[in-house]
Length: 73
Image (cartoon, rainbow, N blue to C red; front, side, top):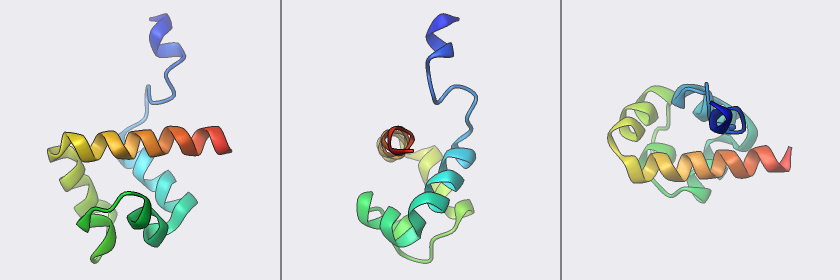
């Protein structure tokens, strides 16, 4: 239980994380930082979520970038 209390990802859905990243960076910068097609070609939250839920390595990159973003705020 105490491990989760200090985990900034705890309680955050992938959609919430992605929305915050898009709000903070914008699609263009997000696609530059994480070079995946769903961020660079006709990006949308819906298509990105489908890809990220099926692709663990991409989701890990998104989560790492989110944690970096939280440190900068």
